[in-house]
Length: 140
Ligand code: GDP
Ligand code: MG
Image 1: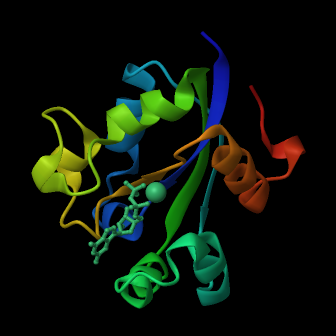
Image 2: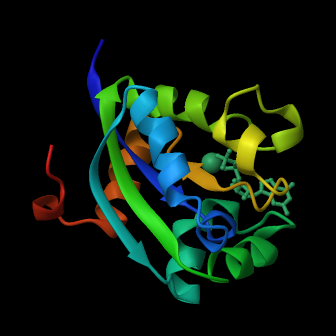
């Protein structure tokens, strides 16, 4: 198995409810290491660019508004198969479909306010990490 890195975002619904520590415990208990982490307020332009792949989706404007409605925590997670592992720890996009014990099952408020983002493939992980972090900020 390969050691990978993936981009994670703790979304505004979760920072608002002071859940950063509980969510980080899920990652660490699940075998991932937090090798970079910073709390920021995204601008509209940053959120639009980050979620550009969804620009044509009907929920795009709502998603961007939600993502700038409060602070987010940007993170790089590292571990064996970190991209897929993180998506297991997160659970399904819609919390109604998320498995027991996952972050989205326990904490998500809705299909939109679903507490966390995680990269979905090696190429997107590399792009998303580079979008938010300089190499010097990643400390394995
Ligand atoms: P993810 O990879 O599991 O985060 O899901 P997607 O890449 O498909 O969607 C990106 C984000 O858009 C999700 O995490 C949700 O915050 C939001 N989203 C996805 N589907 C819907 C939807 O049907 N309605 C709304 N309002 N938001 C959605
Ligand atoms: Mg996605």
